Image (cartoon, rainbow, N blue to C red; front, side):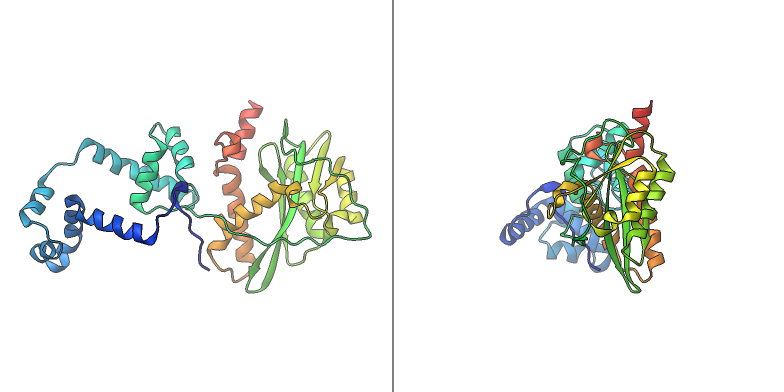
Length: 316
């Protein structure tokens, strides 16, 4: 499966003509010419490479003999750090988040410099693409009121959870995923997978969340109007933990935007990178991402902390 690559750090791509002109200008620079000669000299020889690029051989030797400036040495050092962060994020982070991560290790440089070094190293973060939404409502079921009203803020953990379903294609057929996310920290507190999209999947994910969090006090559980959430069995599970159900308005996915956004992130950053043969392979990949998302992926809305870090700061 081909991955969708994006522009680096929001800078616009120039037109085709502009790119050609920029390329010509770049090759005309002596330093760039000599760097190209250095790359090809081993195959065709220095003399031939200089002749092809219309460069002086003496100039090339002088270029090789010169010492790198302190800034160039610093750039090479920073590029290694940037690559480690970029590939450590599974090619997800752009210049903004990489700048934040560099600051955590004591490297204070501008975002523009991060972008420049990323561009020179060919580091291009993965971008989003449009996803498909599937929700089947039960026309006979009585839905709950929308208590959330697109207020995705929470003052403490286990105050507001949101849930939704998505699906992932495999060679064995669809694998359905249900998650519960705590709006306080955006942490995935519970999830479950199944080959069937039914109420048992929703109940399994909810039980997983309850086991992990042990919620006490008033807890709003917000979902869409899917028949899995309006079923008697699911309602009974929510009542058992003292939860209060809330549901989105018909045809208004923005009412459950946080859950929708998480699935887009999961697919673009992780699942769309490869084709899965079996449901077990897919489940293993999802489990790996859940750990990465909760413990390693920083969030701008959390002050560039991970969900686990954010909760730790709150508890301190």
